[in-house]
Amino acid sequence: MPYRNIFVANETVLKLRNRQLVADNGEEFAFPVEDIRCIVIDNEKSVLSAQLIAFLAAYNVCLLVCDRRHMPAAQLLPVGAYCRVQKRIQLQIAQSKPKCKRLWQKIVVQKIENQARCLELAEKPGAEKLRTFAAGVQSGDPTNREGCAARVYFPLLFGKAFTRDSEIEINAALNYGYAVLRAFLAKTLVAYGLEPALGLHHQNQLNAFNLADDLLEPFRPAVDLFVANELPDLSDGFGTAQKARLVQLLNCAVTVDGERCSLAHATELLVQSLIAAFETDKPHLRLPQIGEIAFFDYD
Figure (cartoon, rainbow, N blue to C red):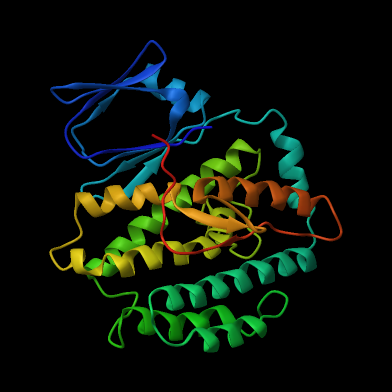
């Protein structure tokens, strides 16, 4: 199983040699492609060979390229990653609105539960109030318990003056972490033959990743907790070191149905369970539960 997340911060030439990614920035480093889970290129002068890109696609590696603002701007989505794409897309289209609403209800409940757990782990008040919101989520969340919880949650976690639309380092870190996880989810959806644009709840015609945005929701508190823990470091700005660590969140430990696994593997379990939910009248989603930030050590 791939486990390695690579963050490229300096001008680097990336190429393929003997089935290995070779990174040359004055000194060469080589990594077996089969071990690579995610690559983030955060330097506009870096160069990739077409041969390497095709090989990464064949191994379903998540490749992200950042823009001059150092935010993820493009990603690699392999063509033909799943052999029966049409069958899976037809399965998506056939889903009834009531079922989609029930699935969205489960996602929102777990998101709010994870937000409550995040507050507890960050030693902030308000977890029980959030769990009250979670208990009130109805099918499709028509009363917007998700939004109500968010209005309470973020000021408790980051301070009363905090807002999600302010241009500060905390929001830059949150947006970066969300973008990496969103891209990884989109890659996983494509690998299983699903169309990321066809969402359960998100239905924006200008958004190519509605379904990825749906499934991202319960994972967001893992990013929130990490950023809350990193607040002292963010006082000097949101830089390369913090970005590299946010990419490593893919190796962060979460719990799914009582079993501990990496966050990256949890995305795969969730996508698999979503497909199973599409195929049954009693849908169940394998949703992540966050815990204290701890990383799997694969070395």
